[in-house]
Length: 209
Length: 209
DNA sequence: CCACAACTTGCGTGTCACGCACATAGTGCG
DNA sequence: CGCACTATGTGCGTGACACGCAAGTTGTGG
Figure 1 (cartoon, rainbow over the protein chains, first blue to last red):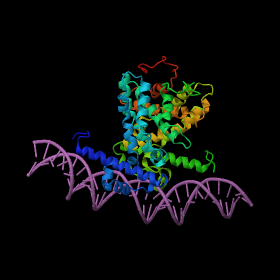
Figure 2: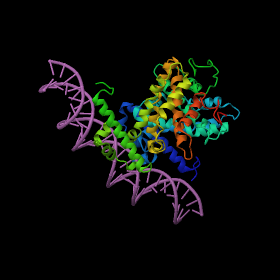
Figure 3: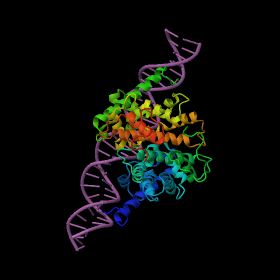
Figure 4: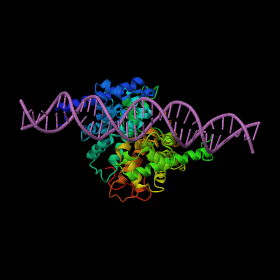
C-alpha cells in the first residue's frame, strides 16, 4: 500500500507506466508529426509489452501517453526548488532549480519537438508543462512565506516560470539555433525573474519600459 | 473570398460557429461538470440547429466547441493592445487592454467555472488561454521594437500575461470571493507587469514579500 | 499456507472523428 | 438576368477508441 519504491507493486506500476510512455513517444517520433494518427493504441501497447486494455488503465488518450515524460518532469519542479538552499534569493533559486532539472541531461530534441510542435498534442503538451505550476507555486509560497489563499504572487509567478520554460523550449527548437538549452532557459527566465545572470547584460533591449 | 464581415458566407460561417459554441457551452453548464460525458455531439448539433456532421466541420471535439468562446476572446488580446495609445508605457497598456477585454462585460462565472475547473476540458481550456500568446507577443514586439526572432522578451512576457489572466480567473472563481474580476486581474498582472494602478497604493496589500 | 487486494486482460458497447459523395446556397461574370 | 464556379451543409459508411464488466493472475500480510 506504500507509494514509495520499496513496494514491488508500485515499482511494477511505475515501470509499466514508463514503458508505455516511452513506447508511445518513440513510436510517435518514428512515424513523425504527420503520421501521428497512424500510431495505434495497439502498437503502443504491443511495443510496451502490455495489452491495449492495460494501456488505457494508465492513460486515457495517446496524447497523454506521449506527453507523460514531460508531465512527470514538470511535476518535479516544486521539489527541485525546495532542494535549493533556503537562504538563496527566490529568483536565483528558481533559475538554478529549473536549469538543473531541465538540462541534466540536455533534453532530447526529437522528443521535445514532437510534443511541442504537433497540433494534435498541443493541449496535452500544455497540460504537461502546466503540471509544474501547482507544486512550484506551493514551493514559492513556502519560501516567501506568503498565503496562497490571499496573495496571487506564488501562483502567478509559477505560471510565468512555466510559461518561460515553454517559450524557451519552443525557441530552442527553432532551426539554426546553436545555443545550449541552459542558456536559452536562463534568458527566458530572466524576463520574468530579474536574476542577474553571470554572463549577461543587466536588461534585455527594449525592456519593460 | 473575403474574410471580413461584409461577406455573407463569412457571416453565416461565424454565426453557425458561434451558435454551435454557444449551444455546447450552454449544454455543458446545464449538465454540470460531472455530467459532461452525457453531452452528446448530437445534442449540441441539434441545439445549434445543424447536423452532427456540420458540427465537426467546425470543431473536432466537444471540448473545442465548449471552449470556443474563450479561445476567440483570447485571440483578441493582441488587437486590444494595439488599440492602446502608442505613447502609453507597455505595462500600463497591457494591463488596460486586458482589463478592458476581459471585464466588458464581467465574465459569466458559470461558463468560466465550467471550462476552468472541469478536468476533461483542462487541455482545451489551456489551449484557449494560450491562443492569446502569439498575437500578444507580436503586439508587444511591435510596441517595444524588439526582434521576436532573437529576443525572448515578447514571447515570455506574453506567456506570463496569459498565465496571469488564467490564475486570476481561477482565483476569482474560488468560493467566497467578492472582489471584482477587474481588481483580481489587476493584482495578478501586477505580479508580472509592475504597473502602478491609478486608484491604489503603489503596492497591493501583502505584495511580493 | 491461505484469504485478500491489486493488477492485467478479453469482450462488448456506445460514441466519435473523418473521408467521400451529393445537394444547396452564395458569388462573380458576361 | 442567367450561368458556371465555389463554399458550405448533410447523410452514410468505416475504423478507432474509451470504458464498464467480469474472470484470471500475481503480490501482500496474517
